[in-house]
Image (tube, rainbow, N blue to C red; front, side, top):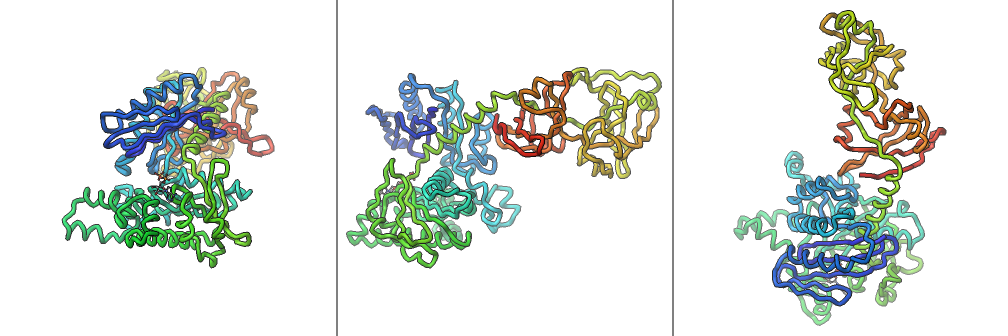
Length: 603
Ligand code: ADP
């Protein structure tokens, strides 16, 4: 399955077309210096030098050439790297207009990145309108950060108002190398405690405990944490107020200093670790200090994250610096014997990562903690994530997706009750036909009275039935002051009653008040396609644009008179943020109660 991966960064533009399973690259594009003298190079040797600065022209020229190169290929989809997914995106998402809007809304949190990512998405959707586009987020992997790790000790109202919390970045890379480490160590990564050090132009460390990121050094923005090429990393926040007050610097200027003029560049004059290393060997004092601060801070984080996890099984070095610099690895990993990591200096010196050998251990054989240099491949990780989503969509597309309907509170009445409430012989009038054949919402409504409160205008659903039944939500129950059981429709034995009031009188029901058991109506044909029978209990995964949710304990109702539809109440609809058009996919629960996942993801 071929995926076009597009990574539109603040000053660079990378793309590759690769196989989502093997990672085999068909061709690549590299665009640099987009802000002053954009140049695009392609793996077929083409070079494009652009007159006009900026992303728009580079994207247009790049995508034009990519489209030409892809003309003979069967592209399955496009994967876009998006830096900030905020609280919204905890996994990759198929791009729709609504998803674009959400990414745009997060631009305040990542003003340097999200608008450019979005420009890439919009332009690519125009160039490749017939294939699905997916967003893969740098922040998603860190959604698992516990509250204590993601919360800053600021006034809570202020933090809430501005979305101030630690989000973490480089998640695509941390997740990828954690997976590679587990495969290399022949273990399941849910059994491992890993510290992943991604050291590139941007640098971050993540503590990955049994498969979940539980701490990471970058925070609300990619500025916090380690020393980076041009970013300062951790600072006393008092410095910022001091700079604003004493040096009279504006917020924009401080931002520029911290993001573009600090880190290795601020300390040594160069943001490139290769220069820093050469110059430090030559005796340059600024470069030596830069190297010391860089590696000191890294060691500090490794120690801290070991403490956070109560131990560590492997420490990973990745990114341009982590993969290539034996000196940085040596300085960070020496004298870690106290935590069980013993470096093999020779192996560290000589190791060379390649595509074929992308994980190399450089610990001594008796070292309990493994030290690993791993070649990260964010493009491949994005392609894999897209491939997985496309596979899941295809799987689900072979089964009918189930429209989800939210049922507001309502009642079904008998002839005798209707006579008492509306006058003898009153016939219900149709307000709206419902999707289930023959059923309708009537114009008539009643008042439902409980011990604490009453609910006005509760709609009657027709036609009339042989048993009175009032279906309400949990919230309604609390409001009325009645404890109604969850029941399937028609099963009203031993349920509480209530008073119904209509224009001509009232009726005190002895029973009939229920919280409807969420259920799916389906025909026998649907049932055989899903492999379920009447009264089976199944799980249904709901996925709207930005978040997924699974409803367990869903009752299957089969009848030739039904139309395929799942019914949930308003509380459940609100919890799942159901909007018209949302659908569900059936996950099967067999008669023995053993869950068997049939299909899990869809849009
Ligand atoms: P990005 O964070 O932009 O993805 P990379 O992960 O490619 O960047 O890392 C780029 C950085 O890696 C360069 O700025 C350079 O400092 C560093 N680097 C690359 N090769 C070496 C090397 N042989 N030794 C030390 N540092 C290196």
